[in-house]
Length: 489
Ligand code: BG6
Image (tube, rainbow, N blue to C red; front, side, top):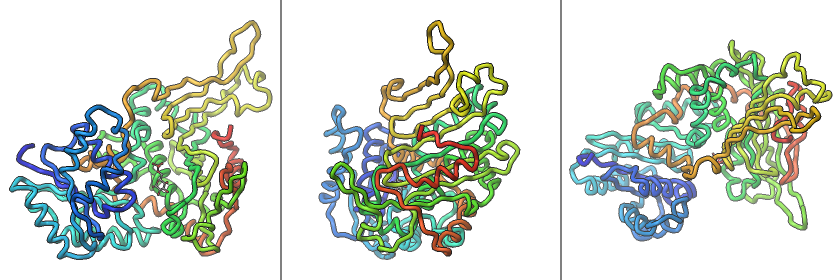
């Protein structure tokens, strides 16, 4: 309302995430008239920069989905006029006090709400939260802090981080972001399950043979090796992005769509899972390869990565949920960098039709005849269901066809970036898509034992060529549970 104002401070404003995601998302929200009437954006970082220089930097990266639209230039100018910069150390209360003064000037006596987006390395997280909360939190409105992963490296360090953050903030002020939750098709999971009669009755061990959660990128860690080597693909993708999708996929029906009701169900399903066994994990690391005269670097060719690094850039794992709905159903995850394609998808393989009259039409490979529901999160968002169908003609030949909902064919509106959805929710105080501390704790409990085992025993990853389909071990793992990865045909 016109009596209140929101100040958004991007701490770590000159970093990659701020430039590539946060500022463009804020601009997109502004363009769509989603930000409150009175708002100000502050960039905060160590480097010296003037407001004009920040605006220049931001304008160069506002190559978001909006930039081809009408009056974009004019809107961008208006947006940039709302952006300011303050240079300071992340652990200096004095510097945050100066920021506080500037924020106050902009707030002009209105009810002042403040959102801090911490886009900074984990080692200075807590110091920055301490300074921001002590010296620059709102005096008469709300103060919220968005934090980015990594939220620790294991159960202990994550719990310690939570305890430290809670010295300065209440749980409901902490917005732990997992940007996969802001992706359109991930948000849609709940709609698909709970607003269509035809899916929910099938959503159990009775009809589902296995579920696959697949993430792949066709590029390596170029430039991010320093960060990545300390974490590896299990912490970077599986423990958060894929596990969050799994929780939404497998949770029981929430009492309502309220944030707490949804998060309660997510925690329950995470707590019903067994910690992952080392036997149920395959790890890999990409090595250099030359194809078509082009050479692609191996992971350890990255100068920021130690030559003898055993950090996995690929992992596949089998997870199980110990409850009545999912008992015995393998949830297979696969995540990797420098693979042959870029995709994120959920594949649901249904059981064989009992006593199927048409089995003989499929020869011995009954798996080929089972239904498969694919939810393609990216790219080319789609939901499709593989069904058996009679090939038209006088004979009786069946083939598999897709009932296909391809987003770009169905919807003309562009799909917002995940960060737009999440930033808007944080401004509006909607917590549904943010991770609560007990969810985080449950997620770490699943992965911590296996991470320790892999690291303490210095397990050597299976090497796979850059641009390939990944280690063959992933197939053996799946085969142990009678599963074939759906993405490999
Ligand atoms: C980040 C990971 O969380 O997600 C990166 O740290 C990864 O390693 C990225 O590349 C993938 O996000 P998106 O939205 O491009 O699929």
